[in-house]
Amino acid sequence: MIRGTSTLVAACAALMIAVNVPGVAMALSDVPVVGSIVKVLQVGGGGERTDGAKVSTSVQENALDIHFTVDGEQIASVPAYTVDYKEAPNRLIFSFNGVRDLDLQKLQQDIRSLSNVKDVYSNVILDDSAIRFVVELKDNIDYSVSEYKEPGYIQLKLYGAAKQSEPHEVFYVHSQEMEQGESLGMLDEQYAQDGSSVIKTKSGKFVLAIGGFASRAEAEEMLHQLSEREDYYETLQVDSWMSNENPQ
Image (cartoon, rainbow, N blue to C red):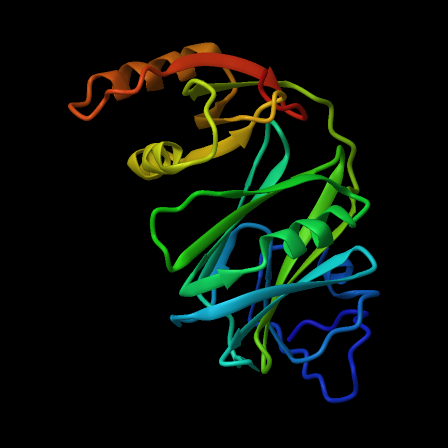
């Protein structure tokens, strides 16, 4: 059991089952919570298999709570989910399975109200029982994602990073710019096993990107491997931009 400085309501049991966050005290401090904590993470996943959950959000201080209900009742455990982090730009990618209803406008409004957020947008997923959204962070912002049960919800907390990082060049294999839609969703699904992600460009459109390499040579080698595949049909290219910026 890990004891933090969390401000818990009287009935809350703070049992820590899994932790991979450097600053657990930061993750558990300041923001009141309800329910029992299951895990705190920065990348990874958890939850349980469910179907038909409705997603809603609320904001308190610099934290976002993601709630789940079925037939109007909060569920005991969160649906299966994953959280990933990528740079160029610095962003969190949330994916939930077994959900079918999301108030995207409210989610975007709530997330944009957090002072450490630069942007938020959804991704197209071909599975109609899954949702994915991306939260772009401002420079030198750290975060934690906490999973709770009884009731089941996810809490995203943002705070200033302990160490300041300098922007650096990042290389990607990426598609041409396009609008959000089925074509982009199909590309993302095709290259999911290669670590693909969808990034918003400075023009407001989107690209499918693979990598996040430290050198052009690594990115070009990946492009060569992809171009040798039988299912390679979308012309991809190698490009770079700064770790805290969006592609042109």
